[in-house]
Length: 245
Image 1 (cartoon, rainbow, N blue to C red):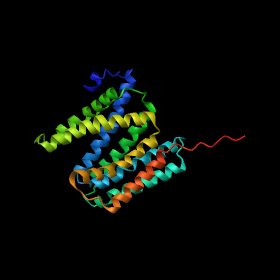
Image 2: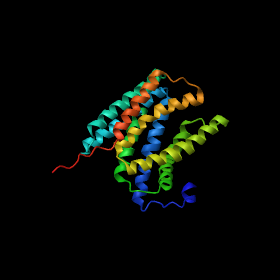
Image 3: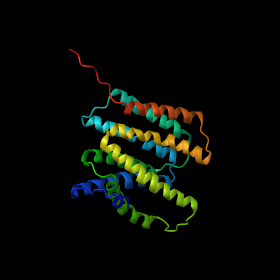
Image 4: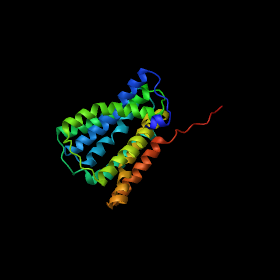
């Protein structure tokens, strides 16, 4: 609906449609589906968040291995960001169980997000965000809908909390967050963009305090500050040495 209303241009050829579908399978179905399934099977949300926090590091390792340049300050920023992430989610690491199935799903989600980011950066040409979002979500829906029908109870009890969560997922996360991530990957370096994911757990902790009165501890504040410092090092433009001679 948004794509039609905005009169956004559709992908130029079938190859771009295919590339968008692949990224949708990786970044929506694989990442969100795998992480959600791991939590459903008993893995604690904190541990899932900590595993997902390895994604910027994996991206940097891949970029470096392919001949890309990751500066020392960026490596330091990645390390500080992950350390801050660990502090934020540390108190929740013991919540839930870890077994082969849940860990495999979480690991699959981590790899899916990493591969989707790198794939999009390499193969996708600039495309209108509304139509790109539509194709990506359509591909994810085609995969996840049969799985949902097969694995879920198909019994839904609608209530204000559920409707609010659905509205937030559709409007803020899918239309807002996914669209912004698509733009950032197209316009920025993969390592710098993915380092912003370090900010998700601290932001979640703040929103949980604001909405649900969950306490913010000194460790959470320290982890948030450390994460912010790490991200600032990763996204900071490299210094240009003045020419001599």
